[in-house]
Each structure stands twice: as structure tokens, then as C-alpha cells.
Length: 447
Ligand code: UDX
Image (tube, rainbow, N blue to C red; front, top):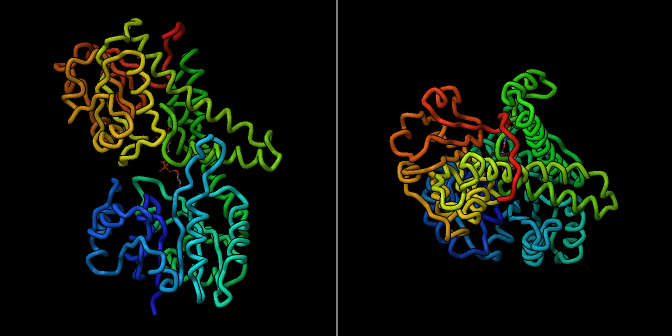
């Protein structure tokens, strides 16, 4: 008989996991405390943008294999496996991860389960969480219940969530005892048959693999951006440098794109949570470099604001600036910790007349910053602009050529925050174009 699966939390991670589990043939119920979200998902409507996911959701809501509820009583003894994919946001005091949703999910399940079940944590958590939850389960579980626990971190990228879930680079399972491994082997049978590497380990290693991966990726981006600071000062071509480095297979070319830095719901918060956790463990110096990674990353935003001011000959106040892109990366509507949105807001606060356009992110950005102005399309955003900023590398921005803009802007000035435009072509068409890592006179002076 096919396994029954519940997925708790229906954000990017949970909704994707639930739909993919249904696609693999399991009966799935997604659980969320947000009744509006549950109602939307139950009608087959995905409340965020993720390529390929709406089709999968609709298909399995229609087939009846995928349902959603707000009620833990419906799933507690129904499911064989409960995946926890709730958020672990940055705490309001900025120190560490807020684990209240994970704790609450475990508590809600444990207080209701009477039979045998496996709880599988997928959320990104500070090392030591699974062992603490094991203790809570042991204390709170009903005498008739037999609850196993595993930690199975998720490495999916927004924009590629379905593909990353169906065909992950690797599967990691932190578990005690063989039950969890056997059940998860059944869940991931298709990926395992395709020779996806499987690492079975203890709780702590499984938790650490996820934060180590994100710390490494963040470090790689800040590493190249620190060299961008050097080439901006002395000259040199940052993209050629990255290409040349990337040919060394020990280094690799991926995540060496200099730009406005990393953002999103994971990398920034995860490196901060990791620092907080190692400090708690008395190892505050061990991950000191992550503070530097964070600072290099935030300096990119400051750099773009200063560059804009310099290109406008210190006349930022009142200048019309078109901001292309507000999401933290393309193919997503996510504006959490987005460098592009942060830059737009800083320019606005400095007195510029900012008009923002993003193919998918306008609504989420407007919810956070209603005072910014938003354009319905690219032509509206760039009309009469004194300066254009390309901050998120959406395909429609990457494809821009000077002829698309030259009759509509007021001045031919553009900052390429993602180094995706062919600079020579723009210069030949009479544009002042500055990319990231490009040599530029010092940007001193107060804004
Ligand atoms: C990341 C991890 O990649 C994923 O494995 C984990 O599960 C969650 O966090 P995601 O947040 O979706 O995924 O985005 P990712 O594609 O990693 O990009 C993160 C940020 O880095 C984006 O803002 C992107 O623009 C930036 N980036 C990426 C760069 O600035 N330069 C690069 O070379 C690559």
C-alpha cells in the first residue's frame, strides 16, 4: 500500500514538497495554520510564483491525491510520515533562528499521534534542534505512540524548486535507528534509482550539512564581490577573473558572479543564524569570517547607491531613476532581503524619484514599501529616466539592447548591477554604462 504523507507548512518548501510527493504517487495532505493559504491551495491556486509548480498543484488537487487542511487532527494518525517544512525566520532581535513554528508543529503532532509515525524535519534549523525535539517527543508522546524522528534537509532553490525536489544533487538523512531510513528510502525511491547520492548520518551532521552549504555559497559570492571592490579601485575585469578561476575544477565557476550581492529567505538569515549558534556554543571566533561575508554583501548595496549619485553628478535628489528588478533573483516573486529592493528604497530615501518595475515582484514589494512607485511594464519604468538600474537579471532585462531604451529615457545612463549586458554595445550607442567590478573614480562624499 502506498505511503500516506503529511507536509506541515505550505510555503516555498512545503508546497513544493507536497506537490512533488503527490507527483511521486503518494497520498498527501498539506497542513498550514493560515486558513486563507489553505483555501487557495485547496482550489489549486499557488500563492507565490514558482515555475512548474502551479501545474503540478492543480493536477494533483484535481486528481484528489493532494489535499490541504488547517487541522492537525486530520493528519496525526492518517499519515505514515509527517514532513515539517515550516519557516525558521530570523528572530526579531536579529540573533539566531526563531524556532517557534518547528516546535509548535512537533508539539501539535506529538500530542495527537497514537500509532506509529515518522516525523521528518526539512526546515533549516540550528545544530542541536533535532536532538532537543527528540527529547520533547519522548516526554510528550502518548504511551501507545511510537514516533521516530529524522532530519532530512532541503536544498531546493527558488525558481528551480520542482526540479531540485524531484532530482536533488544529494539526499541527506540524519536519523537514529533504521525505521526512518527504510521509510525515506521508499519515499525517495525514484531519485535513488537514478543514483542520487544518499548520505545517512546523525542528527547533528544532517543539520550542519544544510547550513554549511549555504555558508559556503554565501562566502563564494562575497569572495568574488571582495575582488570586485579591488577591480573597481585599480581596474581589471571581474567576469574574466571569475571565468579564469572557474576553470579550476576545485573552485568551479558557479556562484562567482559579482553583482549587488545575495539576498532571499535563506542565505542571509542562515549565515546569521549559524554565527549566533556557534556563539552560543562558545565558538564565536570560529565563524568570524561570516560577519565579513555579510558586510561585504551589504557594501554592494551601498556601492550602487553611491555609484548612482556619482553618475548623476551628485544630483540624486529629484532625479528620475528606473529600477529594473526588485526580487532577490529572477524567476521568483520573493523580495525577502532583496538587494534590489533595498537599493530602490535607499535611493527613494535619499530623495530620488524612483520608479520600480519587476515582472513578478511588484506586488510583494508594494506590500512592504507602499510609498515606492511601481510601473506596470518596462517602457513605463524607463520613460524619461535620468538613470536606469538593472538589479535583477530577469530574461527580459538581459535581452535589452540600447535601441529599446534610447528614445524613451531622458539620459543614456545605466548601471548593470548583475553584469549581464554587453557593455561595448551600449558604449558604442553613446551610453554611460557601469557594471559591478568595473573601474570607476572613487565614490567618496556624503549622500
Ligand atoms: C539558496 C540555496 O542555493 C539553496 O540550496 C537553499 O536551499 C536555499 O538558499 P535560493 O535562496 O533560492 O537558494 O537562491 P540562490 O539561487 O542560491 O541565490 C541566492 C542569492 O545569491 C540570490 O540573491 C542571487 O542573486 C545571488 N547570487 C547567486 C549572486 O549574487 N551571485 C552568484 O554567482 C550566485
